Image (cartoon, rainbow, N blue to C red):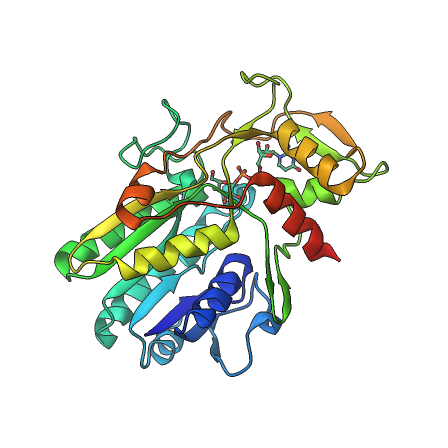
Amino acid sequence: MRVLVTGGTGYIGSTAVDILISQGYEISILDDCSMGHADSVPAGVSFIKGSLLNAGDLAQALVGVDAVMHFAGKSLVGESVEKPDLYHQVNVNGSRNLLDQMHMSGVTKLVFSSSAATYGEPKVVPIVETAPTHPTNPYGATKLAIDQMITAESASRGIAAASLRYFNVAGALKSTRGWLAERHNPETHLIPNVLRSTAENPVKIFGSDWPTADGTCIRDYVHVVDLIDAHIKALESLQMGVHEIYNLGSGDGYSVREVVAAASKATGYEIPTIDSPRRAGDPAVLIADINKAKTKLGWRPTRDIETMVADTLASFS
Ligand code: UFG
């Protein structure tokens, strides 16, 4: 099966490419490299440096393709608050173009990178897929709009689709070409920031007065390799005319201070931190209910927070 990986040069997309190839899939990549890195493309893979906003690029990328894994998009919550139009243009209009070009090319299978940000501030945790969706930022709103577009598309044009709502993706994969890891600039994610913390520039803890046991936010971290395993299981379980939504997390929550403690253990020294004000838009607690992915996909995350921290640390060297 040939899979088009949009966003295949980014952190999560490049990990997907590597694992898909190792499992015998043929790969095409479409990426404008605005966030990703062309040097992550394996030799011999069909790579189109192009945009979801360009119909010609999409049509070219879809040649000979049986299914699409759609990772491409803008994904920074803070930036989305500053540039909501850009997020709508790239994420929503780009996905609309992809669906239209898939229809024209006769491609009917889609696995989409959605987000826990679609739920907004949850009333109940762990969060189930049927929970209300009230995104609190434009990024989450674009992911929800795309999920809804895919639901309509599966009903009207009969495509087979799955939206995977990621919680906090972390860790890295050691490939034959070196580590595939987060290479964001600026980096906003907790684990890489904690591991780069120094006495001169300590990692900021955004809020220590949250209504949690230690006063810091709780998140559900999932290893990127487990995440891609779920994508492949979702791809293999697609049914025509059906759009399934699955949460992907570990089902467990870790506070910011617990992540710092895991990093201190991994590095062998006390990570310097500085208590700072809350970050706008952060919910206190986000934990996934992953029972649907467990029962319907037969998926189990197997890599714990220590492994996520250790792999991220190893990827720096
Ligand atoms: N945090 C800090 N200091 C930092 C970075 C983060 O204290 O330097 C805290 C945040 O306030 C938050 C937690 O660590 O409580 C995790 O923050 P991240 O920025 O690593 O991740 P988020 O939970 O904000 O966002 C992630 C994805 C989003 C997605 C969201 C959905 O990056 O794309 O999960 O839950 F929308």
